[in-house]
Amino acid sequence: MGYRTLRQAINDLEKTAQLVRIDQPISPELLAGAIQRRVYQAQGPALLFTNLCGCRFPAVANLFGTLERTRYLFRDTLRHVETLVKLKLDPKSLVKAPRGLLTAPTAAFHLLPKRVASGPILSCQANISDLPQIKSWPADGGPFITLPQVYSESTDKPGLRASNLGMYRVQLAGNDYQQDREIGLHYQIHRGIGVHHREALRRGRPFRVNIFVGGPPALTVAAVMPLPEGMPELAFAGLLGGHRIPLVQPAGLLPMPAEADFVISGTIDPAQQKPEGPFGDHFGYYSLAHDFPFLKVERVYHRPDAIWPFTTVGRPPQEDTSFGAFIHELTGALIPTVLPGVKAVHAVDAAGVHPLLLAIGSERYTPYRQPDQPQELLTQANAILGQGQLSLAKYLLIVAEDDRTRLDLHDIPTFFQYLLERIDWRRDLHFQTATTIDTLDYSGHGLNQGSKLVLAAVGPRRRTLATALPDQLQLPERFQEPRLILPGALVVKGPPCSDYLPGEDSAILDFCAFFSGSSQLTAIPLIVVVDDSDFCATALNNWLWVTFTRSNPAADTYGIDSFITAKHWGCNGSLIIDARRKPHHAPELLDDPAIEKQVDQLGAPGGPLHGII
Image (tube, rainbow, N blue to C red; front, side):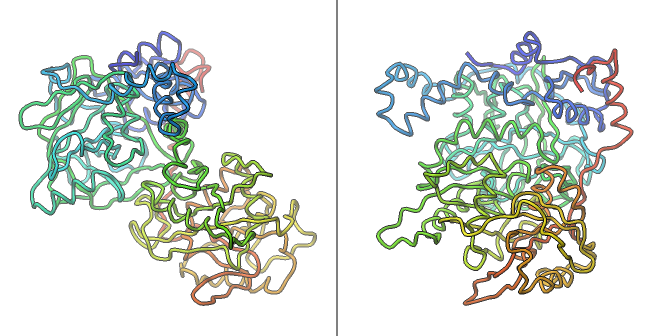
């Protein structure tokens, strides 16, 4: 029941034709990552690289490359997770299906890690430079671990109960790191390890960290699970893996999974930092070099038959998209228990996940409820933005549940149409103008600094949306190529933004003034100004990515006939979002043409990827 090692999972995938071996020499410098991305885009198999140049360890990629394969890896344990979720939602429901009660105690028992005296992980040691030095994008600052499981414990309350296991990227070499002695550790705001960092900083002493790589696949998923505080990720890994996670603990070190493939052990001085990055990230841009903590490496353990798992990230969808979908399947039903009144939340992968949240809430206020005005919906919006990683959201679009219209948050065009038909730009825009945003988001006014915008809509339809461009639509000078993306949503190519003036861009202000008092855009409530309107019109995902990764709400939102009343901003005409590239934005991720040609050759007749890509 469940895989106890990474090799067990790989062998099973190969036996069931869900994995392909690549035996010819493959460079870890760009080529391995490019292969993984191309195979993912083709929804292809997992990949076992048996001959990475300059490295004695094999590597596996695209393990979670499809949602179906991810489900397959946990097929024996999903029902246990579902049983416990049902028990949490409605304890009485299991009385109707008592068989579920029989599995619940066993599943709960797997939550408890077990201590063992020894394990395969302690068999061998190596140096950092012996590990696969995989570099995914041309401008990356060096090789990275892209599927790390970073384990730390509270210095105030040591032990598993207050531990944290998170997936924080790790830079193995480059920049100012001392070879084999130091590695970079990038953890963002709102992350669990940050609590341990602050405790150590207060005590004025280093804290220990272990970085697990590989091991049972359940550990990898546990490291990205948004678990409630107080539930250790190692416990969830046992539940999902179908067995108690065996842990070994050499003297003076933190515990580590006995069946891990690699463990890097060391300490972090919370008062010291070094530049980390750049790194091609899941927003579709490079996150630039900034000072972050680094690990002083003491030991690198590995099992005798160790395999190095890796992925690459970039503009969605990528392999981590499967993580998000799988996690939603496991936990989506619990959202109403955590956020009362909220029916569903969807972090839009195509928009970089954190920049855009869609939500369905409810209006239950009585007896003085205003039927066409958001009330409780705003309370729920604030609760969403105060919840774990959801707090990183930049745009939150929320509507009230309507029994007459069953909305599916994954049907994005229908959701936008529903919202745009009902929203009142004079009243329903709610800004946080100076707050934290995702560390990886460079649309703001500084690292971790930006704004948020809640768009809330309830009530009956107030407008009919345009499904075609208005006849003889005239645009102001320097604006061209209008394209209707969705009913009521227009993109327009604007002049390049060379001198950024937040909220005061003269070209955008001229656009708003041009349409002041005009009825041409009455049926088009949303206009996005972009650099390339044809690119945005080619695919909905292009529009979502450009609009929500290249705009900072408080700085880049304008409106036709806008006003401020009692510090509330609104507009009588269309809402304008400036989603052009700005001078301070990070560079976009672009493939290396020469590397892509090498990938093409692997897909030619006789190549290991023929028929796959």
